[in-house]
Length: 266
Figure 1 (tube, rainbow, N blue to C red):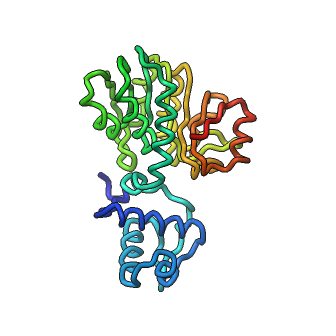
Figure 2: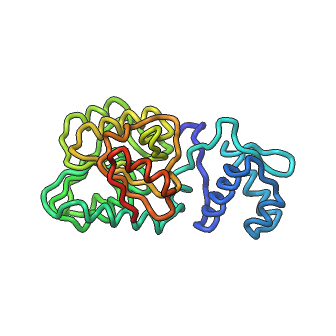
């Protein structure tokens, strides 16, 4: 793993959730002080200072006297181990809504990486005769022991932030296959910008995945609705269905629906 990849040794689920809460506060306010965290999270000043120091060391915030500020380039991609702690109930509901849309018969599904698509993969383990094609090491590890599933993993360059294979080799793998359904995770989806992610190489790989599919389902919790990140994966005219949860902005959902996308709120 390269030295410029943030890695948080969170230690416990409670601490991981606290890191996410801190980063959400920084994204909302721009600047957060130690007293702010003591008041908002009910933690001690010593704990607040330790957390801020660790987040700054991993280049997720900028340390200042008495607090932190947001990075100059705005919202950054959360490390995978922190994303795993966000909105678990919403992601489970989304995954169940996807699973009922996949037939219990011979069917090929492509899954991009991401914490929501990983929940979908687990829900699909009860299906029979599925072939699952993925570029995600996390998903492959979750489902490879289920004998009823055939699992195909692309090659490529491993992106350590998301544990996905990306690049030309992964793109050629998807281009050589025909799948019935692509299930695409996202860092943002908006009527104005389509489906977006933080990394342009990941975006190209996921675009190749969608290109091999007869239909595409986008899965995104409510925090992603209306958000626009760096690189477009696909425009909305490539998306059949968006499945999200009840926290999503209803006005933005209506704008997305007006483009012809089926919107399902789980």
